[in-house]
Amino acid sequence: MGRSSLPVPSATIAAAHGVFNLVGGLWPLVHLRSFEWVFGPKTDEWLQMTTGGLLAGAGVTQLAAAADPEGPRHARRIGLVTAVTLLAVDLVYVPKRRLRPTYLFDAAMEAAWIAAWVRGTPATRGTK
Image (tube, rainbow, N blue to C red; front, side):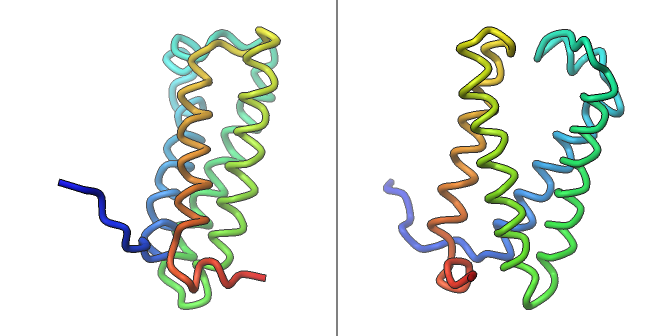
């Protein structure tokens, strides 16, 4: 069976990416020990908590935007900026050995979110 070439509705991408960002942001806030087991120990715990809080906030905003007729345009902006930023951090700091190679899994997911937003419905691409 082949893949469908139909674009995914922007509200669906907004909701899915929102959940992804919310869960990813809450993980270190709720259970730092398991997060560090996967992604490595952090020297500045406050920075990890700040990053987690900002990522969770982006996720909540994307989820709220998904239900609003104008919301997916805003969710797209938040999603693209978040994904590009995290992808850049992953690709710069894994080779420098400041981040564990497990961050390359996140890099792959961030690249997939960028692709989803770019390939989304025409209304998604119409964002100014």
